[in-house]
Amino acid sequence: MERMWRNKVESLALSVQSEILRVKSLKKTTFLLIACCFILSTLLLGCQSNTDKKTGKTEQKGVVQYTCSMHPQVIKDAPGTCPICGMNLVKLNHQDVHLAVDAGLKDLIKPTNESIVSNIKTIHPQELSLSDTILLNGKVSYDTRQIKTITARFGGRIERMFVKYNFQKVAKGQKIMEVYSPDLAAAQQELLYLKVQDDPSLLTRAKEKLRLLGIDNQQINQIIKSGKVNYHLPIYSNYSGYVVDPVMDKRLNEKTDNTFNEAQNAIAFLQGQYIKTGDMLFKVFNQQQVWGIFYADANQQQLLKSNQSIGIIYKKDTLKTKISLVQPYYDSGQPFTLVRVTLNNSQQQFHIGEFLKAQYISPAIQGLWVPANSVYKLGNRSIIFIKAQNVLTAKVVQTGATVGKLIQIIKGLQKGDEIAESAAYLIDTESFIQIN
Image 1 (cartoon, rainbow, N blue to C red):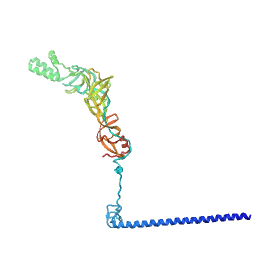
Image 2 (image 1 turned 135 degrees about the vertical axis):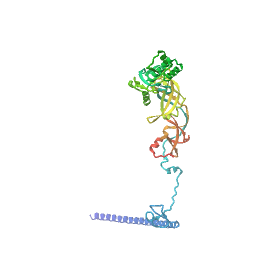
Image 3 (image 1 turned 30 degrees about the horizontal axis):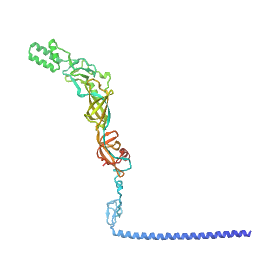
Image 4 (image 1 turned 90 degrees about the horizontal axis):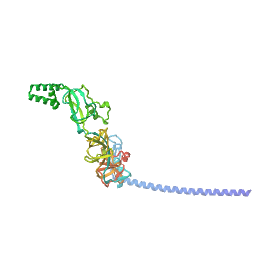
């Protein structure tokens, strides 16, 4: 038992001795760390003191000026207060900062509304000779050069109408109405009176008066032969074609579809209605020659040229003719290109209002061509984005014809230039871009 207690005491003594040694070692390490920190602090203070001395010498060499922190335009050689706001003046710092900018970064310091730094896909313009096949839709219309007008050469009351509805076909010399005219009745009575007087000179003048009033020689001879006044004088058509009264003519100019019902097609003149000298009675449309009117996109105007061959697709046949007119056309605020051709209709195969189709092959155009997506329409200007060292800059160009998905560049672009493939994408994402 005694031996067991002796072993425990010895073991405890060994443990205490070991702990004492560990504590001594820790104190020694701590002392070394404190000594190192002291040496480093001394060195740092010495460097700071040396720097302060050098700085002081530099400041003594320079001229000390004072300025206002709120009004930097106020600069004085001595301390004091600002004459504007009354604040104490502070020392003015004369340090110059020089920043060397690499050539590859020079575009990054430009105003942000003049260029874009991007790696968007780019393309090069191509030197091509292109033509296009254009399909056009249109309709048959009257040739306004073939429209004639029948006017009243004397005034009176309509006694009888022989034309019943608009677009009725009439022939030259056909009677269209009978009119009672007091003036013509008096002129006829004068003619018959001078016939009895047997005065050839006065009789000739009376005949001439009737001719000026619209009575032809056949009618005058019939009046002299019968010896009676004709109170219902006929009016004949001077032309062959289809008649339209003034009311329908006005509505034709206002409407675009040219579709009317039977009530609308009725003649506006009524029996018993009075007409005056010079009134327009009818317009006569001659369909021996008609127009084909076609409408194309506004950007195709550069391809469509007058006197160029065009094929009219009609009843599975293609009729070759030439374009007589190309002009801009606006409808409901939208721009179009109007194309007109003249068609021979002596066989009456074309009908007014009938739909037509045409095929036009444009002459080849030589020039620089780019995808239409690479050009952005900004009002009446067209812009592209030219790339140089990953920097895209907007530039105004002049465009020409459009063939398919390609557009011609007339001015503002060189063959070797590199441009953004999608200008609309850049505008959508960088809408602040300004054009110089």
